Structure formats: C-alpha cells, structure tokens
Amino acid sequence: QVQLVESGGGLVQAGGSLRLSCAASGLTFSDYAMGWFRQAPGKERELVATISANVVSTYYAPSVKGRFTISRDNAKKTLTLQMSALKPEDAAVYYCAAGVFSLRPHDYNAWGQGTQVTVSS
Image 1 (tube, rainbow, N blue to C red):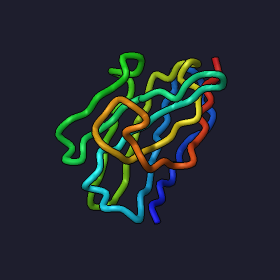
Image 2 (cartoon, rainbow, N blue to C red):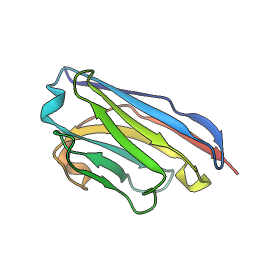
Image 3 (cartoon, rainbow, N blue to C red):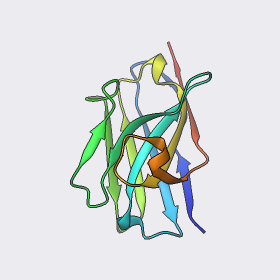
Image 4 (cartoon, rainbow, N blue to C red):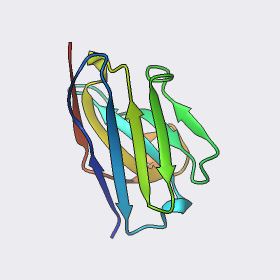
C-alpha cells in the first residue's frame, strides 16, 4: 500500500520560512518523479515544484521560483520543499505526489493527505 505522509506545515509570518517533508512507503521511490502541489480555498490544485526520479530535472512554478527549493533523498524515501520569503498568497494545503515528471496533476497517481500552510501578513 502506497503511503505519502506530509509534515512541516504551520503558521508563519510573511517573509518567513517553512520546510515541508514527505515520507514515502509502499513504492519504489526512486522510480517516480515527485511533486509538490497546493490548493487554496476556491482554487484549483496547482503544481508548485516537481523533481525527476533521477534528481536530474526540476521544475518550479513561476510564482515560487527563486523562493522554494525541492529536493529528494532516494535512499531515505523522502521529499522536501524548502520555502522561504513566504507570501500570504502561498497559503494553501500542500500535497506531495508520486508519478511521472509532469506539470499536470493527473499524471501523478499517489497523493498524500496534505499539510496546511498559513501565512500571516
């Protein structure tokens, strides 16, 4: 059974930093691209960043490029999103997902339960 468990969300002031983690089990982690998505109330789920299975390629949404860093440790089966210079518009539920290297949510077939990020202005 595939499980992706996010942690690290919380409340932070604008300009602050948070580090999200995703622990994976039940899958050959190194075979999958991993992505971070987010969904704010009333909005569609959007890709934040994704990283290829072999760690060679990454992609960042323009809104977070230069502020967020995605990384993975295939030996530990963990995915991380380091977020800095947070803005109120970054507030959302953040999800990690496993799939193919893609910008589209439907190309990811395993999802975590999400972790809430709240940014106060």
